[in-house]
Image 1 (cartoon, rainbow, N blue to C red):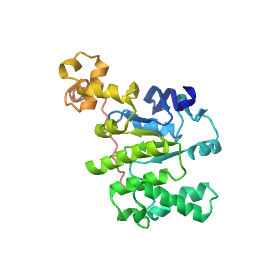
Image 2: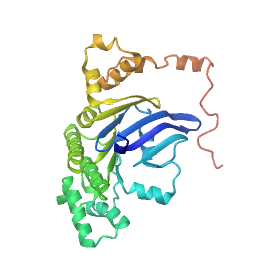
Image 3: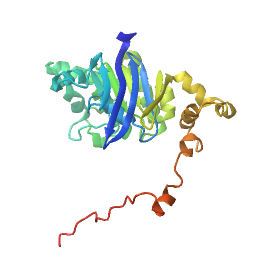
Image 4: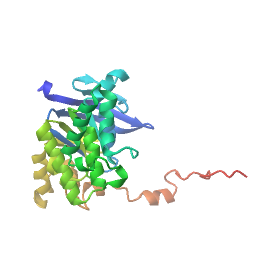
Length: 294
């Protein structure tokens, strides 16, 4: 139902230097679900995430959060909406000069008028949720990469958001730590009813946490379906998969990580030959990268 849609992207286009990085994106995210956005490197996943959080506006189309368009609103209104969602950045993005406790306390101190005792309780609750209460007084340089991700998640939870955005939450983590992060995402969804939007290309993680999955390819949204639909496509026999459409075979290759298929077949193997023969413009600048001072 319409009231259950908390994020809506309609015909979204984003260009950089005249090139469409996102081209006609349509996507709706429902309250309380975990939506996984996936695709190869350069497919537009991170750009779509940045558009959703209002880092910059789309060139065409509309994006709505909580039923309100964020494309043309004032910065004050956008700030109010930002308080209703949290972001886990790929690196954790913690302040190195602050302890984990201080990192989590910062948004509460900045955006609320709560008494110091209440803030203390809130911070301890958030750190306990991610299993880091005993490490509250440590600095980011003193903890592991997985702990930094969990600390970043605790900070994202500081203002009790309705939506959590995750940018590659499993990137750079070992399999056990990655599984712990996945379990944490699912626990938060179940316990707090948070809507989650997860950008990832880690398929094991995606199939663990997703309710629905959206596949991007070269800036276009090519499929939005349930996790079950993608699981069937991923595991069906090769002879069945070969009978599918070109789009489905492309998705299947990505899901399975196959070395051969539509994604690799479309690579231009004649690019070097055509460049050397002068059929394509020379991309190498004739100017030196550094200009000598004397």
